[in-house]
Amino acid sequence: MFPAYLENPPNCSFEGQDATEKILLLLRAHPITNLKWIIPAILLFLAPFFVPSLARFFNFDLSAIPASFEVVFLIINYLLVLVITFEGFLYWYFNVYIVTDKNIVDIDFHSILFKNIDVAPLRNIEDTSSSMGGILSAIFNYGDVFIQTAGATKNIDLHQVPKPHHVADFILDEAHKIYGRGRDAYHHPS
Image (cartoon, rainbow, N blue to C red):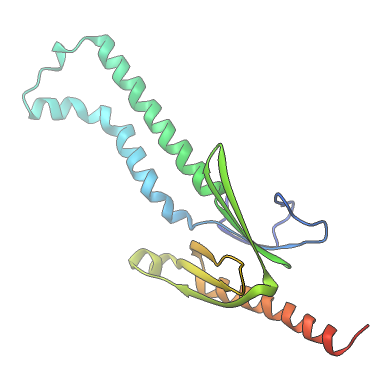
């Protein structure tokens, strides 16, 4: 439904894409990383069901609270659940890493009003590395990919992506294809 790793995605484009530029790889953080907002949202959703039990445990009389306060508490609680869920999903869905046949694009979505797009040409890539740390990373095969670029181009870091070792190798292979084309064009002028 919402893949975190997609090779040659159909019907996909991004802001600033050249007409001849082809998307080779679309990446997002691994879905398991969403647990950091899903678990609090579930706990907040279930909290009203446990309030009566907690009130009895602490000898607190809930009947002393007006019914209108209870309704306001429920509305605020479920609005908070909605905000946490909506913001968490948007942040995960719109923070995207794109590898094309020309560039690596890092789209960082900070809020509805602010996003940052970093582009590094494949021809400037000097090296890639990947790392995985922790039990969840090992079980679900996700981690970080670090891309070193030449010159003034900003280094790109892909955080918590699926198959980090494969992604790092894939990017380096694509960069080598461009280097190869560049050398062939240099040695064999048209």
